[in-house]
Length: 124
Image (cartoon, rainbow, N blue to C red; front, side):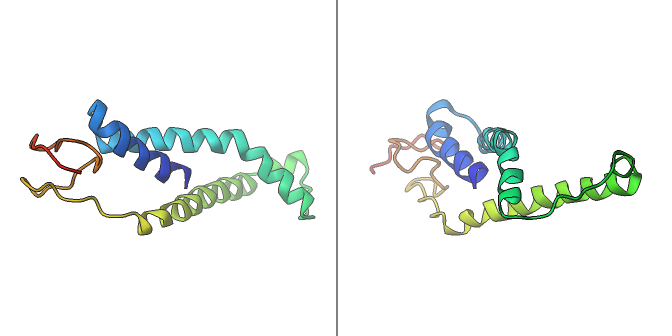
């Protein structure tokens, strides 16, 4: 959710005014999302512990086994992919951008005073 909302906001607000591309806005959203993941990752473990979920209880030798490391990597991969899918749900409810009355291409910033594609003046 953080990535899509920050990326959409960056694209809408900064995209037209600073001329950054949608992919740059998406990268900014990913940067913020990953930063939140690092900052709040420990909170998830704390919540799981408070909920009474059992700890794995593996020894150091067991944690270093290739099968354990594969399972940990697949678990992280699944968690990231699930997070991206959940975060992308908000895109289903995002309004479509209005088209430019001159070139008929989607306006990046519907509150702007001109089309970033053709330069036509846009009346909000």
